[in-house]
Amino acid sequence: MTAQGMPQRNPGAIFRGSDDDLTYRARWYTSRVVIYGLLIGWAVVCIFPIFWTITTSFKQAPDVMQSNLIPFLDFEPAWLGWRSLGLSPETIGADSTVRDQFLARFTNSAIVSVSASALAVFLGSLTGYGLSRFGYQFGPLRNADIGFFFISQLILPPVVLALPFLVFYSELALLDTHIGLILLYTLTVMPIVIWIMRDQFMSIPSELEEAALVDGQGVWGAFARIIMPIALPGMIAAFVIALVLTWNEYFFAALLTSTDTITLPVMVASQTGSQGISWWTMAAISFAAILPLIVVGILLERFIVRGMSAGAVK
Image 1 (cartoon, rainbow, N blue to C red):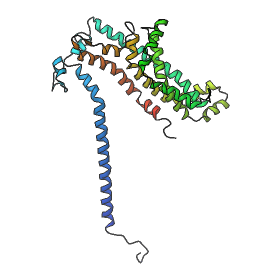
Image 2 (image 1 turned 30 degrees about the vertical axis):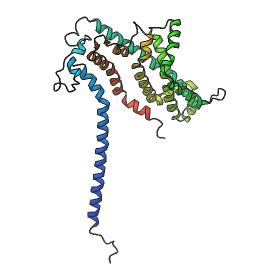
Image 3 (image 1 turned 90 degrees about the vertical axis):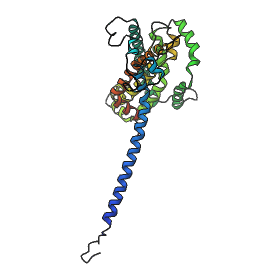
Image 4 (image 1 turned 45 degrees about the horizontal axis):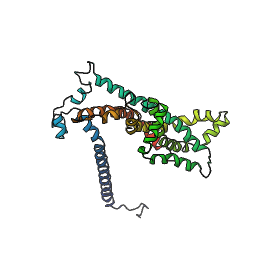
């Protein structure tokens, strides 16, 4: 302490503080470079299949066999894949049977996947709400056991259900019908939708419903006016997940359809024949099938993030 009562300053403290600050900043920037470098690398890994699919749709046969990747550098782009679908600039205005078939397959996929996903979210939301708010008992089974039973259905391989569904649908005349695929797809995605929605509803305080009941709302009124708006991001996230799963489903679509309700995955797989695989046509169909999901993901990204993270922090 000085005579005036003020603390004595150390002349070297400023320089030591500057060194510490520089070290901290160097570590901070280094960590950011490493993190963003890893994220960029992972993004490249994830996006590369889409890039390969797009470029392949514009390749000639030799370019496909030689694995040329970069347009205008490794190969000259052509409309071979899109021409085979009747979607190239010179064929888009002309009549095309293949284009009509593609649009029919696209429509079938849209009808089946959207309908099945919406139905699964509707039924799964009601089931998840019941499991999160009410107590059930079936013999020794409680709510937790019932929830595990639903999610355990995902363990069952689809091939195990092939023959039963084939015989069952044949008896009910549901083969090669939209309603047959919609009902089956609803059953296949219901477990994951129930699991997601149960967690969503469990993260919402039950006091909100109690307050609504006190104000004169019934159980259904409280659910529709109070709970559903809060759980909407989770419902949208569940819908998108169900949409992706049903849109890309191939096994049952190939097994239970033949003419009228063939979907895009089946059409993609059909691009093989005695002359080999038509990679350019397969790539064009694949990109046309991927594009709607990309658009849906971009448009609903904020709902998906909010829905999947709801309940993670309380």
